[in-house]
Image (cartoon, rainbow, N blue to C red):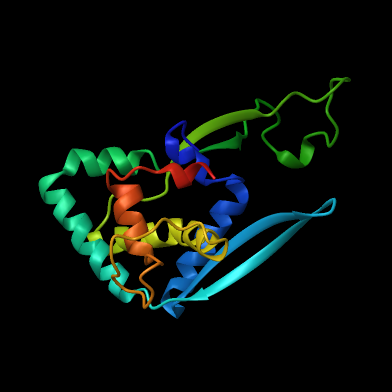
Length: 193
């Protein structure tokens, strides 16, 4: 994750990227998936939370909001989305000069000693790449759906300024959280939890 304030959102990049992929698949079924990790005694207890939520209204709102930001605040939108990235290291296979026919290549290394450290390549992976507004809205919901669910089930969601797509005045919908605290200028003290 980048060194931005959003870096606090992801505790384990591997787990959270898988959670994003799961939420991408579950969005069409109106389900958000989140993970909580609590300590009971001396054991870590990991729980999966599935929350039913009709997200089409949120997709429409976020799509309109992204479209408006592209029109009137493109640099602000780009700056916010550029902070939503993951730094990934991948192994690179070096080109080895050797026998043309791999059948003739030795199976064991010819030099004794410890193996060389693999070459690593660092790549920056954008969590919400440039796309059509609706696709970006769905990606925002996939990326922050797990985070929203975790805050929801632990009663740590910030108080909304009004209701949008929920029945409770005390619970913001996912698009309110994303609009105010991810794309907006809202203060984000709850992100540090």
